[in-house]
Image (tube, rainbow, N blue to C red; front, side):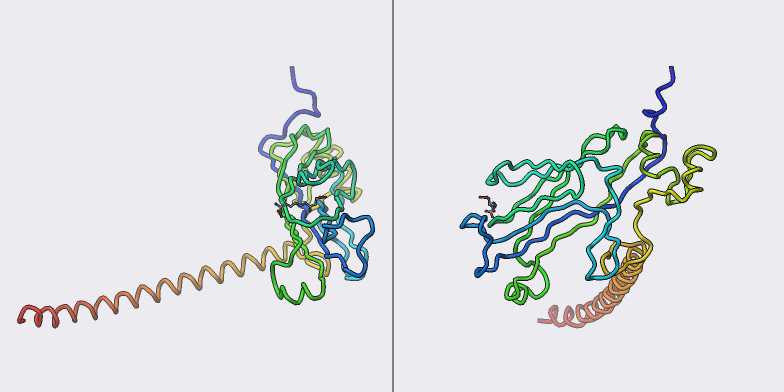
Length: 259
Ligand code: SLL
């Protein structure tokens, strides 16, 4: 008996959806500590999972691509020193805001929409409260926000048809339209594409783009060329030094024998 359509897996298909996760922390202003914070707490922080930022101007409220059509809920497991350390966030924004005094690893567990039939996936984020890059003293003096944000991709191998349709809204951004006459084609034709793919270009709010990816590949290519040239130079240097050594051994060796 054939499997029900919604649970049929698409053989050979792999699809990914990008997102960012991380934390933002800001030290308390000693002259204006939040009244509700325990005496030993020093920072306010937030840990989050979001789509790729989309808004371009810096002053604007930051927008991000919708990820809630594939991500149902997110569990953040905080340090045991926190009351109710396991926080389940059932709808966007997928984030937890807290105050505290110390850095620790946060387990972030992703629960996908039920149609996906996918098991939850987990990753870790090291909460950063203290500046760790750039001009550290300046950031401390200014009580600057400490951000630690990573780019990731949720990869779905051989997704079930129903989930594939949810992910793509019918048509896939990479141009692979699965069903010519079906919902896919209709959605693609109506421009109803839920691609959530990496944007082509960067803007003020978003540094993750195909443009940056390609620049990074160029940088890597240049770096490889540079390293290869360095290896070649070292090799010719070695050959030259070995020649010198051979000559020295000839002359000095004779001397040694004479003694
Ligand atoms: C450290 N290993 O020693 C870490 C532990 C714990 C962080 C950090 C406050 C919890 C609370 C808090 O910041 N815990 O009492 O509400 O740095």
